[in-house]
Length: 280
Image (cartoon, rainbow, N blue to C red):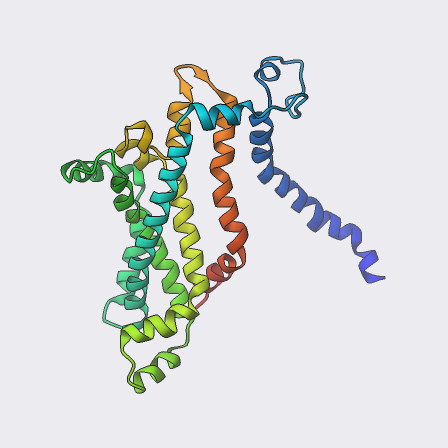
C-alpha cells in the first residue's frame, strides 16, 4: 500500500524526468537513423513529416559503402584507435603504479602535474606537434595519429588508474614483498588482475576519444584513403555548399555503432572503474 500511495510522487520525481532525459539523449540517434533511410525526394518536400519516413530506402548506405572510401576510413579508425589505446594504457599503468605505490618524494605533485597536462586544449598542442610530425616524416600516415593521440590519452588514463590503484590494499603488496616477489611480479600477478575494472574503464575512455578525435586527424592526414571516419565523413561528403545528408547521417550512424557496442559489453566494468577512481 505504501508503494501505491507513493506512485504519483515516483512519476513526478523519477519516471517523468528520466523519460525526458532519455528522449533528449536518444533523439539525435533517432534523427540520424530516420535521415539515413529517408529518400532524397522526402527530404526535399516540406509537406512530409520530418520525424517519420514514408518509403524507407538503403540507397544512402549503398552509396556510402560502395561509392566512397568509407570502409578504408573505418579500418583506419579501428587500427589507430586500438593501437593508440594499448600504447596509452601501457604507459599509464607504469606511471600510475610508480606514483601511487612506490611512495617517492613529490609523487603527489607529479600526479597533479599529469592531470593538469590533460587540461591543455588539443587546439594548442597540435601546432607544435604538427612541426614534430613533419620533421619525423610521419605526415599523412597512420603513425602520425597513433603517436600523437597518447599525448591527451595518457594523462587522464594515468589519473584514472591512480585512483583505482589507490583503492587496492597495500597489505597485499607488502605480503608479496616479504615472500620475495619483485615489483614486476607484484604488478603483473597482483595489481593488474585486481585492477581489471579500472583498466577497462580507462581503455573505453581512451578508445572513445581516439575514435572521435577530429583536430589531429584533420591536421596530420590529407590523403583520402588514410582519413578516419570523423574527418572523412565531414570532408568527403560535403562538396562546397552541397550536403549529402543521407550519406552523412549513414556515416555518422555507422561510425557510432562500434563505440556503442564496446560500451554495451563493458558498461558494468566502466562504472566500477569510475567508482574506484574517485574514492579515497
